[in-house]
Amino acid sequence: MKALNLTPRPLSLARGAGAFIMMKRRSGHIQGILLVGAIALLLLTACIQVAPTPGPTGTPADSAGQPVTGTPTPVTPITREQAIQIALGEISIPQPEVSAVENPRNPVARLMTEAEYARARGAVGALHPDRLVWVVQFEGVSYSAGIGAVPPLRQLNYATVAIDAQSGNIIGTDYTYAPLL
Image 1 (tube, helix red, strand yellow):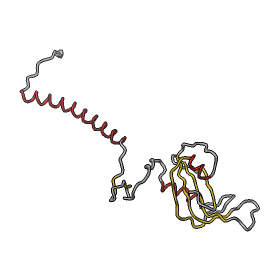
Image 2 (cartoon, helix red, strand yellow; image 1 turned 90 degrees about the vertical axis):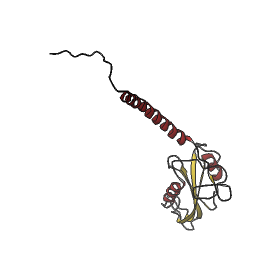
Image 3 (cartoon, rainbow, N blue to C red; image 1 turned 180 degrees about the vertical axis):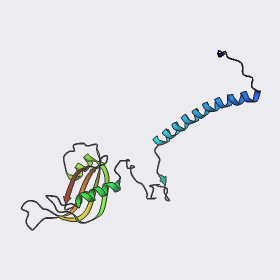
Image 4 (cartoon, rainbow, N blue to C red; image 1 turned 45 degrees about the vertical axis):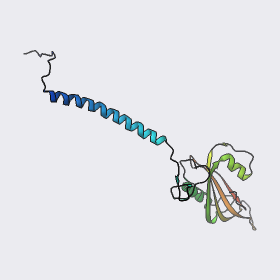
């Protein structure tokens, strides 16, 4: 059996072939650098906030072209539309103390802190004052109810639902004569 000769020997490549091998090695490094650069660029663009584009009047506008005033609405897992649907589901079911809202209409949804919501209700404080909540209000008639409730029942004209903007959990529901928002 013949022994293998593992001593290095100089390559006898033509000048062009050696340059090709070196270029392949460099292109591997270049591809790695380009890949890292592309990932860094993607991460950077994900962190940049996009300013609203000016509308026809020169004021910032939202994606629907409506003027944006005041401070921008923070992005939350629960959208305005989802909050309205959650609130509609809540007020459409009769509760022990109040009937379901008849013909709920004209929803108004505002994103605010729980402390702001507590002040709107006339409460002294809030359990989590900095927590963001969607406060959704509907017009629609409901009636006070309860054990032993007999006519005349009190008519309530507005239903307001507070929803945790992160989880979608209902924090509270108010039925009132006058609007809270």
